[in-house]
Image 1 (tube, rainbow, N blue to C red):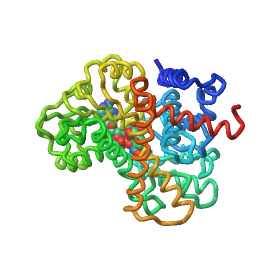
Image 2 (cartoon, rainbow, N blue to C red):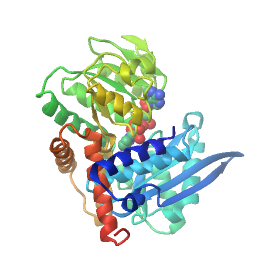
Image 3 (cartoon, helix red, strand yellow):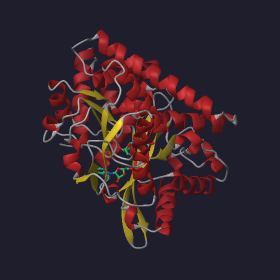
Image 4 (tube, helix red, strand yellow):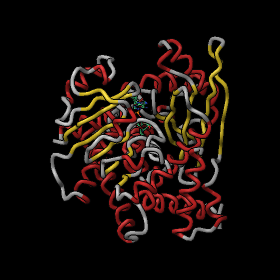
Length: 409
Ligand code: NAD
């Protein structure tokens, strides 16, 4: 089943729960703009997309992914989740996403730069600080944002740092953007532990994915006394029920090694890692990791979706039946886009804001958004999951903006 079909099922559930008219919901069933091209680099052709899902709340906003398995269904779904995430976070953006079907691990720096610039040459007419604002995602980073900004400014003939976020500070980025997704996820984890586990200490944690989101999340949880028992990256995982030496593991990863090359603990496959015993499972890699095939084997009682769409629709039902608590992606990983908003606002106003102030602001925003979601969850006690509570808020804010604009009646 495609991810889009899964998302439509989730929307159907929300429509039923909230008695939303078909004509209204139609505004959320398809993206408003799909741009597709093939980038031609040294005789190879790479499919590339930029998709805006909705813009009732503001310009498009969402990352660009470089991955050999990216396809239109995935980019469309990622754009859909961005629309809901931006809405739930109360920031003035619609939702968008981009992707290039290409393996950056097989490319040298020159080819990475060529792909980045070619992407902007193809899509620059649709991008801009008031049109659609990209950011980093899987296998894209500050260097790629820098080449993209440079190419965009070349094409349009003026400086416009607010056209892209996740930039290095020299080009108008903010220091906290680097670890903001994990920082936000950490604040939400603390709220979850306070709410469902009476602030219990020494909880054990598994982290799938050891890139930007997963590595910083592991570090923050470890520094706060959580016991990290397993982590993985694309090549496999490592497990020690007594707790891994996180600083040494991070050191090893930063030297360019894979986590499974770390010489301690037991090596495990990515599939095995998800089913290990622990209190909390943090999913920080890719979509569709927990499905109907493995959902029943998940032992952790609390699942945090730092990745986008790591739990599919069928798995949602199985996890709910097994009384597992899933903290939905559109809340758990929204720290990244909220920091992108801070960066964009700073680029536009010219004001320079202190990092401490921005971190405090992020904490306030994450905690406030947790409360909004949890209030709906409690008001409808036993009838909705946390994901559905978050979707109800996000969908209704977009529909309300559509209504105010007169696009739906
Ligand atoms: P990244 O490229 O920095 O890291 C991805 C990590 O996942 C790498 O460690 C990679 O080895 C690992 N990985 C890939 N396939 C895997 C597999 N099958 N099993 C286990 N690990 C695997 O990407 P990122 O920015 O950390 O993004 C990770 C997830 O978080 C994505 O779903 C992304 O959409 C989401 N996310 C990221 C941000 C952000 O600001 N970076 C914001 C919101 C959501």
